[in-house]
Amino acid sequence: MMFRSPKKRYIVTTIFLTSSFWLAIELVLLNYTNRLNVEYSSSVQIIQGKSKVNADVSSDQLQPSSDEIGINEFKGLYKTPIPHILKQGENGEKVYNSPGEKEIEQGRFQLFQFNELASSKISLLRTIPDNRPETCFNLKYSQTKLPTASVIIIFHNEAWTTLLRTVHTVLARSPPQFLLEIILVDDHSDTEKYDHLGSKLENYIKDFVKVHLIRAPKREGLIRARLIGAKAARGQVLVFLDSHCETNNGWLEPLLARIAVNRTIVVTPDIEVIDLRTFGYAKDQGGNNRGVFNWELTFKWRTIPDYEKERRKSNADPIRSPTMAGGLFAIDKSYFYEIGSYDTAMSYWGGENVEISFRIWMCGGTLEIIPCSKVGHVFRESQPYKIGDGAIDMNNMRLAEVWMDDYKKVFYAMKPQLQGKDFGDISERLELRKRLQCKSFSWYLKNVIPELVVPDLYPLGRGEVRNLGTNQCLDTLGKNDPGGEPGMYMCHGMGNNQFFMFTKQQEFWHDDVCLDLVSGEPDTKVKIYTCHGMGGNQKWSHVKDGPIKHSLYDVCLEAQGDKILVRKCNDAKTQKWRISSYPDEERKKEHIL
Figure 1: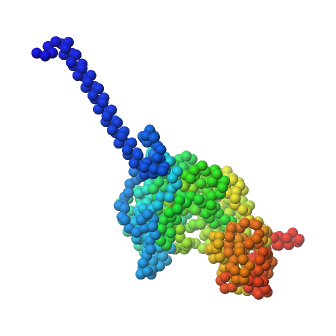
Figure 2 (figure 1 turned 135 degrees about the horizontal axis):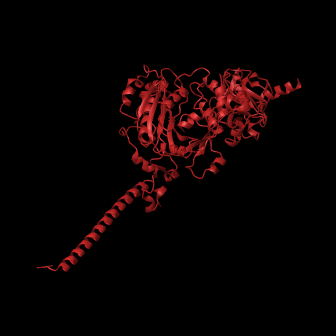
Figure 3 (figure 1 turned 90 degrees about the horizontal axis):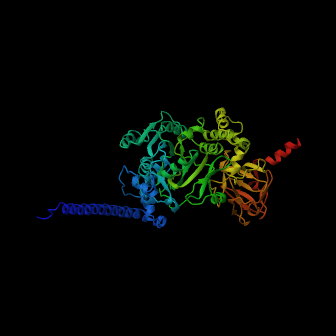
């Protein structure tokens, strides 16, 4: 018989066990190697989706080494509660209604002040262009350590599709571990006229556990309605959105990550335009503007100045913004209340965005636009609902009185009709400023927006420019961009498009643009261009009740119907003008007395 010897059996057994051990080791290694290859292939596929960004990433870097992942990898975590249905407007393309639908289009436009018929033909979750800078795709964010967000959406008489498109893009393009809830606050909509906002809306959102609806028992206005939403919010960060937005992939993570760095940083997405007439979505990269204000305290977009461009090292870096548009922003909830939330004596909307912007900067915070967060927004030219008479003026007066120190005189110079009007009790807000040890408005101008020109309090002329022949006033007619053609309109005494200053540089100034004449030929129309302070085409002469004469071309402004043009100077009343006030002359008379 074989292996009768105990010694031989021991040797054979040892050889067998040793061979089995090394065979097992090889099988484990082979399985591990195959798994690595699969993971590497998957990672390469993700990277190749943005090959221009991470084409040179090594295999070691591709292995998950921490809690952080690239922004595109977050898309794998998103949950889409409704199917993507292909309809018109995919990839943000424009939608045009047929000629036979014009009457329906116009009727719905009156209700919503945008082309709701075009919107109704678009999916609630359409594809839209991804305009983020390429450098955004190099950034990584934590999968577990970002703060949670409550998205608060205020609506009043909103269209069905725009409201739900806002909701669904938030749900479908936000990491579920960070999106705690969406709070819809109905600011007392007319649910008889807009019946889709009644039980139909309530039944619809029942299927979405993260969506909650709060109804205000009376009309509150945007400011107070937001406070209702903020009070109900459970998230660590409050994200305010308007009710006609479309969020893009990766919109939320950069906002939360920036606040996680420092809770006193308040952030806004880079807001992209959704055309109100076609619902076409902007296709350019954007990120070239920031928020400012004029001395009437109106929010404006302006090109990023050179000093801010030099501070930023990459297109993905945050943009420091002196003010924000106010409709879309994110703020740490505890910090929101710490710095005074909103001034509850302000009503409806208007001015609250500039007020909170001043307060953030002056009281130790920072306001930034995040280029890697993109959100589309329908910008309406007018509102389809009424707000309280004088609400915006009241809000702006409160803002000026609390935060602008002596510079409030500039605001009142721009709005002389508000001098002496009641702005309510501001003692609580002044105490807030004192308690927070906020800096002066002079500090804000010097450190946050040094390029802003402070107007002369005593220019040669200021206010409306009235023609003595027609009794109408010079008006920009809303054509306030360079190249616009001003005209004549009924004088209304409200300033705005009819407010001009005749400066000591002899310019007719309106909100950084000046009357400009490119030719002295008869009947040449006057235009407005950015003020350059060099005279030439923008230099005029004028005395009270006299002509406005161009210094270079020796021609005079003349009113002709709703137009203004230049003609050879004469004694016609249509060439005689009077400005509301002549501060420099009036001050000199006071000194003589």
